[in-house]
Image (cartoon, rainbow, N blue to C red; front, side, top):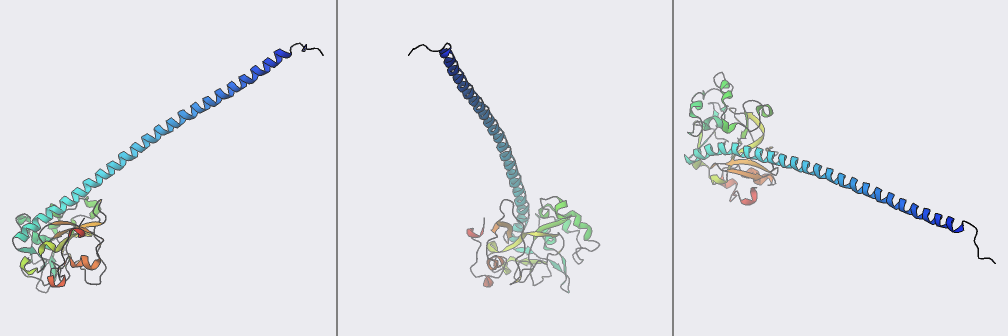
Amino acid sequence: MSDERPDGYGTHGTDRSANGLLVVVLITTAFMCVGSIGGAGWFAWRATQNVIDREREARENSDLASQEAERALTRAHFEKLAKVIAASARAGRLPQDIYDPQGKPLLSWRVMLLREAEGDPQLFARFKLDEPWDGPTNRPLLQQMPRMYTPPEPPSATGPNRTFSRGFSHEGAAFGPPNRPTAFRQTSTITAPISDVLIVVDSASSIEWTRPDQLLWNPGDKRPVFREYVLRNDAFLAISADGQVHEVKRTLPDETLRALFETREEKRPGLRITGEMRR
């Protein structure tokens, strides 16, 4: 048998081998290109996500800063009122609603508080104390609402000349009966420690600032709605009879919370405003 191969046998074999190698190289190159494009695409997506994340974080920080500022304004608003209440308490008295001889409420304790030096004695002198809050002399004075009663929100959100700073008028509360002709109550008549008796709350419902609150929370009544304190939705603001501002926890049982507004020690024996009750 001859060892001679047909002409061109070796050449064609080599060509086929070369072509196979070329195909492998081309496929490999294609995969590398696709991989490069895919890698570049991933990096571009990641960069976009980083920008989105930073923008979202910036918005969240801005919202948080805005809420902190609103919280500070709300607290500062309450501190103004607390300062005047503290001055009244140091004088041994607390303001009351003004009633007529038949027991009809005429003007709010907020008007009487103006009489304090830290209040607005000149504005107080303009009120007619034997006339209702909406009488011909007193109603125009609604426009003169002092800053200590002015909410931090714009009037469009609350209504004109309205305040959220309110007090309870049920029996046993600081602004409750008996009705006193002088429209002041001596702190000596409060048998519970005045630093542990809440008298003013940041209510969820506003009222004309000169109008008597007549806000009641009798035993068995549904809990009144207090305003949410910004960033502290589990607490609300209140002022005690000595003029301190408290962030009171909403999680307190109704019976305990209501008792904190009680002025009679025998009705709340030993109950004190402790750290566990505050934020």
